[in-house]
Image (cartoon, rainbow, N blue to C red):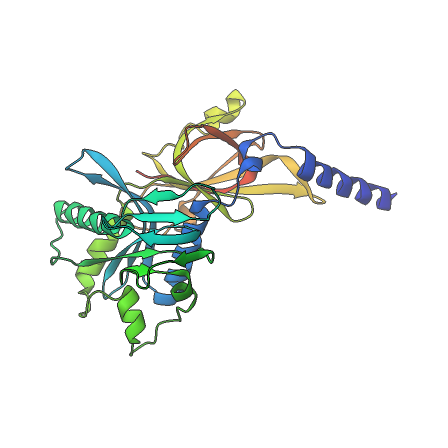
Length: 322
């Protein structure tokens, strides 16, 4: 009898996994966002400090938001990093733009100068930080373009020093405590003096509270950047979740309940009230709600015209920008 029950559970889970998709989680492909988070994680491990992903910095000149992939802040300096996941043969044109041939598409792709773009992002970020009351020396932010795709191949003999190709990327090693190789200095070391501790703390506080994309972490260690819109589901569930707004909540995590490996019809949502004074969430600050696992998150992904829905049961955590 026990064997029959276990077999039934296994069959049910396999059927649900492979044949029953009722939200947009099943349509997620390996995305540019996943690559960005992978790079950010490795940079933080190699160089310490703190990384910030998916910033949306106001640009006073254009009255728009400048999207910045990664900002790496250490006690010595800060670096704006633009990720270009290009594959194929890439050449540089006279105006600085890039032409990519032989990638996933049949036609040649033309890209505006990525180095100039990263330089502009660093300048806009510097201006934003100064507007928030922190004075920086000119050129305080260095800027780099990382190309992590192994299928990238440069046609010209030498790319700008700000470009970190795949071959260079995989050769990065953990930073020595006291000495630095000349290559690492060239790749990610723009400043020579240690940043004062007070400036370092101010800079981190500004970046923590800067505008950025909302972030979903879904099953399988996948990430989606975009804008959280609302919850949908049974009325009692949406009422229970009514206090989870970006003005009040900075982060929530989903805890799934199961019996003998079968997911329960309800799950627990733990959320942390927004606190600009501290980045770290204390254990005592978390609040809990129990709702149906079929409750959905309505989310507008970055670079997509389609509004997507994700069941709470497919989400691990969600971070909301202020």
